[in-house]
Image 1 (cartoon, rainbow, N blue to C red):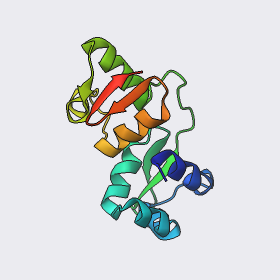
Image 2: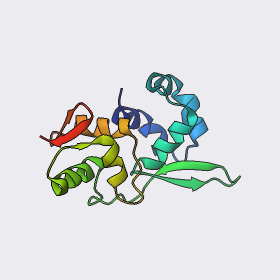
Image 3: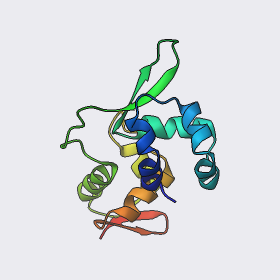
Image 4: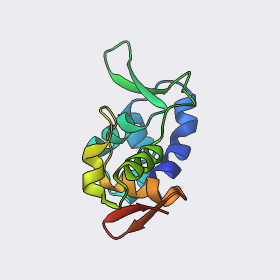
Length: 132
């Protein structure tokens, strides 16, 4: 299971309105366990998923909702990786790519691996990512 699969899995809950990370943690516990995530890792992932935005519920509790108007021109993580590799003109280690992502775009190494595996423009060679 990858993060795209998880997003598709939790999408129905998000379409129903604002959902807290605790609610998602309880409702999809087996998936988080399969990924080896803690609730803090879930919160970090939620904050990095571009179609989501956080909001505060009336009691001050933090929740997540789908963005109403997700821009079609917003670059994906894979788009950013392709741009960085094109600029560098050579394969790069994933760890280095993480540090070169634009301000505000947070990602972990597993997130980069997942994005690379799902995009036919990218190819993983051990710790290096290169253009296909």
